[in-house]
Length: 411
View (cartoon, rainbow, N blue to C red):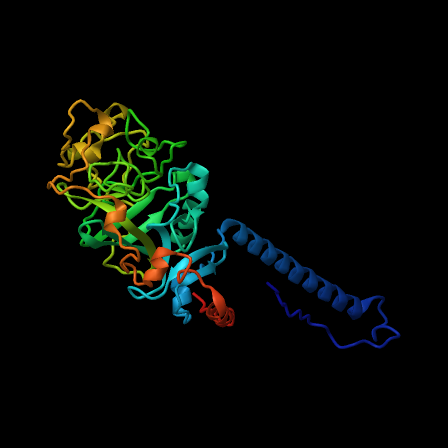
């Protein structure tokens, strides 16, 4: 900041160079100089105080949040092609879906058939930084999710394909991930869709857990270790997007990619994509920190049964001794074991027959050579995610040239 001060001083008529007319020594000239000096000192004092005030205000005021340019702002700037872009100011690369459901979506997680499936049973640092290929199976990263969602209001869309029931989706108008010091705590609310609300009542408010950092609500086990994938586990889950890719399709394998549609029905998924988009502030949308599952309890407080699931701020929670000691997703929901061999125990006793009796089949028998186009991209790109999903070739170069010449709107 530049401060311009106009300095003025009342100086009397200029005296003759040979001295004052009345013959006195010093006289009016010295008086005028003294007055001018006093005025200058006063102005300098004022300027000094202004500078000190400005420095104090800057020190007391937190810096404004950075302006984030993500897939939403790129879409607003006219970018229309889906592909990999670099967002600012962090910076990191993301896959932008610019074509479906209005465009402007930032993909944060994806599961799909690949020749070599990505391993999602990883530790804390991997989930924090992200892994996989942006055009194929991937996890964007917890820190990236926090950096994006703390700067603006975001919505979440989850598209999924059950191996028998086909495409389902879930939409949440509120999605936010807290800072690392909060355990990257999840806030999600305001569900709509046909997949069932598997997130807001059971996972919202939970901290993220991996096999090497147990932050779930289960007392006698590490859910991430037991279910072999990182997630915002409760004790343990009603949604498990980062589970095993199902080599054999059966509804009773709790380590697979699953989503509870209701208390009576679980979806076993062969495709899944989670994506977020910035939304305009809407007074009708609940943005309170106290969404379902988010409360003021201590982090070590635990919930016992399904009846104690957190649905409002008034739900009572007791002590650490109340941590859940069983698989809630299998105990609370009515899924049955149809094993023909009663002598087997644990997961081995679970049958390949779904609860309604249809024999399970292998993945190869379910998926055609060129999988169904469930995400709106070409069938060829579903077989090889690197074709069509990433920006390649001359078309990509042209699009990138156009993008670099864009002037993003100020927000």
